[in-house]
Amino acid sequence: MNMDRLWENLELVVSSCQKCLLHEKRLNTVLDEGSREAKIMFIGEGPGREEDLQGKAFVGPAGKLLDKMLAAIGLTREDVYIANIVKCRPPGNRNPSKGEVEKCLPYLRRQVYLVKPRIIVCLGAVALRYIISEDARITRDRGNWYERKGYSIIPTYHPAALLRDPSKKREAWEDFKAIRERLKSIEKLQQ
Ligand code: URA
Ligand code: SF4
Image (cartoon, rainbow, N blue to C red; front, side, top):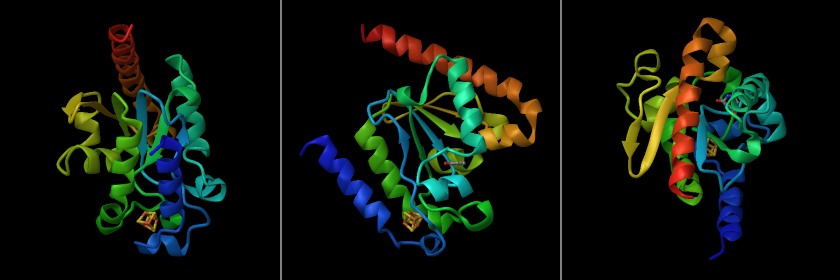
């Protein structure tokens, strides 16, 4: 089957999903943003207010900061793929519950399978917990590389956390430089 059909299928299933109670208050489901052919994928937590309104990932204040950080390492949205752990906005931007995440994760796994990125960046504690390990801690484990199933995975702070606490930006910048270097070496190997 061609890729467009597979994506259309996923879009359709997610947009009508009612597997968890988050469907009740959402305005729109939020599947992704950016390029579905990217070598690098960013995973956030879940839609905020602006994302819920527009149906696109990372289009609010956190997304604006993410764009700036991408630009600092020479990337635009068209060079990256962006998704979230849950596809519907948790009311008041609370963390999604474990049950909600477990219901929603098969969609993210499908996205990873279809995009097949080389690098996965976990943005913040929620993505880190569900992608790497429940015992992981963002302040302790950010900036470390994890090799899993052929993917190079690195956690860093969520841009919303950087907006709340700008003193974390220095460490986030270190992580983004490491991401830039890893991406460069992957591109070199493919030449
Ligand atoms: N925060 C997230 O984790 N994801 C978004 O899409 C927007 C804000
Ligand atoms: Fe379905 Fe995920 Fe939305 Fe829950 S958050 S209703 S599992 S798409």
